[in-house]
Image (cartoon, rainbow, N blue to C red; front, side):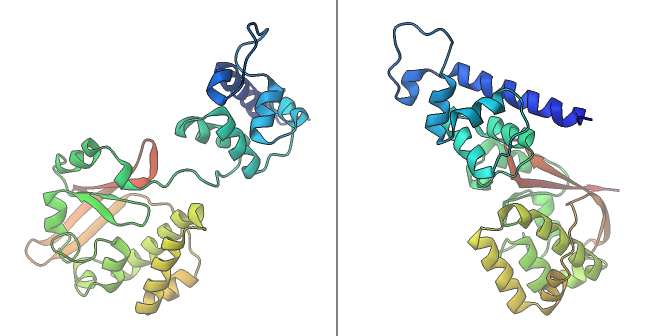
Amino acid sequence: MLDTQSLARRRELGDFVRAQRERLNPASVGLVAPARRRTPGLRREEVAQLAGLSTTWYTWIEQGRDVSMSPAALARLARALGLRRAERAYLFELAGKRDPAPGDGDADDLPPAVLDAVAAIESPAYLLDRHWNARSWNTAAERLFVGWLDGASDRNLLKFIFLAPGARSLICDWDERARRVTAEFRAHCGAHLDDASLQSLIDELRRHSTEFAQMWDRHGVLGREGGERTFNHPNDGFLRYEQVTFELAGNPDAKLTILVPF
């Protein structure tokens, strides 16, 4: 008995790929088109050639057949079809594969308006990039996170939690929070196993923090979820918030965190 969900996904994948092929202009990919074409866009064999694939294999994809598709082959197909970020992500989602190069997700690529929007939020809010460096934060967050966002210290969230002297006194139930953050970061790193700079950050934390090394070696994995967050602030005393985290559209590695007061 056929898995109806898998069948529907294969059909949608085939329809999607065909629609992208038909919208392409042969001249835009360096092909000389005859005066008349019986079908719009490129031919199947032309797309297959551009992607370095067999025409039969590509035809089977459009027909919704159950064919083996490697991430590398899908990446070549995405390039041949000229897919934009959202279209490429949709292709890999339908194929049930992880994109080997989904985009760097760096907050440097965000429009200035996105960074400026953080300042307009009344509650403490900050924006993290792929390496969990704070790239933007508002005044309320600067006041809350003493030793992280209020001076010239390193803006990396993990370095603050594990290496900053005041983090343990500021963050209530530090052990539990540190364990959860480590597991959340491991889940985040799963999509970037080939990122040398992320591995360098992990190595640095392991060298300088025994607690991080121990927690990292447990291989815990958690999603970056919301929930209650409490602090013992040196000036404002005990503070309690509900944390909400958002992934930004078009840049899933950039995460906006907002702490809403109870």
